Amino acid sequence: MINQTDLNGRVLFDQGNHTFIWLGSDPNYRRGVVQTNQYLIIDNGKGYLLDPGGIHLFARVVSSVSRYISIDKIAGIFFSHQDPDVSSGIALWLGVTEAKIYVSNLWLRFLPHFGIVDSSRVLGIEDGNKSLSLPSGSKFSFIPAHFLHSTGQFNLYDEKAKMLFTGDIGAAVFPEGEEEVFVEDFDKHIKYIEGFHKRYMASNAAARKWLSVVSRLPIDMMLPQHGAIYTGDNVKRFFSWFENLKCGIDIIDSIYSA
Image 1 (cartoon, rainbow, N blue to C red):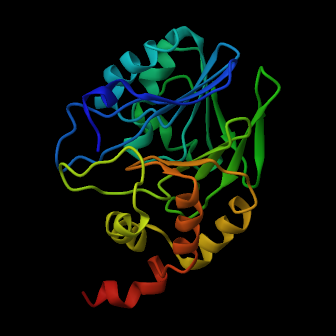
Image 2: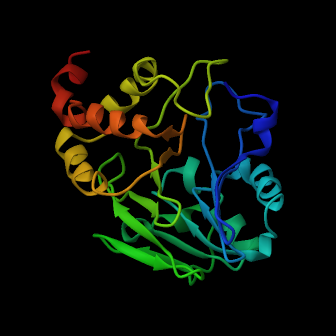
């Protein structure tokens, strides 16, 4: 269960020059507004933000980041896809940092609608597996997760921390008062993820293609943009569940007849 101390976030991995941080829950989270997670990675004194969120979260996320690193040390910002809950604060982040923005090539023409004037620091990720070298000598891998749900979605794999940031994959929608930081019981957790994945994920074929890539990686934690973090055996249990899920166009007849 999320408690008061979680408002400030948690350090999930710390190996001296490389730290992976969950930036905490939103104390002003309102029913009817999608809950989101933001993450910060610090590598050799440089910060990297993962899906820092929409405009209404900007002040809170800046405050959370500032507990761990100076804003002017943010070197990169990764957007898993184009949705406003992920990226509508992009112009504000470009204004307060010198960071480079990493996002699928498909969304370069759409992000200016969030108010970007100068897009010279926005770098498109091409389809396929790409990577970004870090100051420590480690790297981030941009893992394709296309059509899960976005047509141009990427995951980010932190090689040193063995963390996989999955964007919308693994997302949970909790009833009020039942929020968790970590998945405690996967069987009970299914009811929080099933409806979302059936409707938002494009197809079982897309899920299996993604799994053919990520299942080969050593993963200690899987971190979605919404809901709880998967650790240990719960990562594999999610993979097994997702591999057999009929979703999107697989169930389109039932959606039209509803």
